[in-house]
Amino acid sequence: MKVILRAQVRGLGEPGAVVDVAPGYARNYLFPRGLAVEATEGNLALLEAERQREQRRRQHELDEARGLATRLAGQTVSIPAKAGEQGRLFGSVTSQDIAAALQKALGVVIDRRRILLDEPLKTVGEHTVRVRLHPEVEIDLRVSIVPA
Image 1 (cartoon, helix red, strand yellow):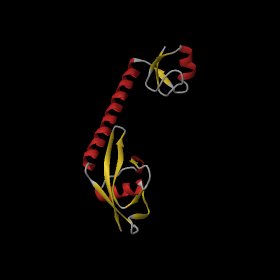
Image 2 (spheres, rainbow, N blue to C red):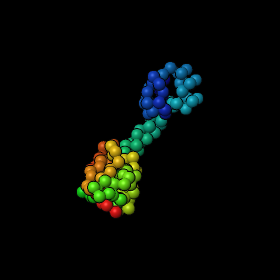
Image 3 (cartoon, rainbow, N blue to C red):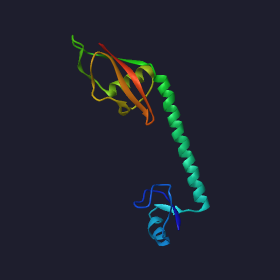
Image 4 (spheres, rainbow, N blue to C red):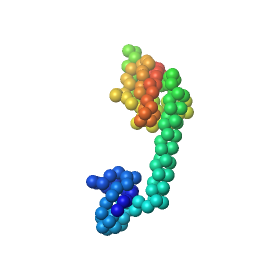
């Protein structure tokens, strides 16, 4: 009996996979738990429509990320911070500070977890920071820390 998996089933496959199983396994285990539906023409058409909808959503997210990347390319974000005489900060500039500065200066909302810092910035001057806008789109953002 052919079924369409609605959830990941160990030993069978991922959601959306069409697999062949024993009729009793499908009737007694998969169907009652909502793990699968019968692979009828109508259900297969719904599965294909769902796949296309997901594909369009992913493409839309990628296009938005690329548009944001072109908008941010070449931009410098300035962050004022208290610093000592040798240019060492009292404290540090974190990804959260950079995200807040981006929102304030450019009106761009970026989650702080998308700003890739190995360690917080602790000196005055220009720094280059990687920002992952999408799994396929990363940019280098210049961050200028100026003494306040």
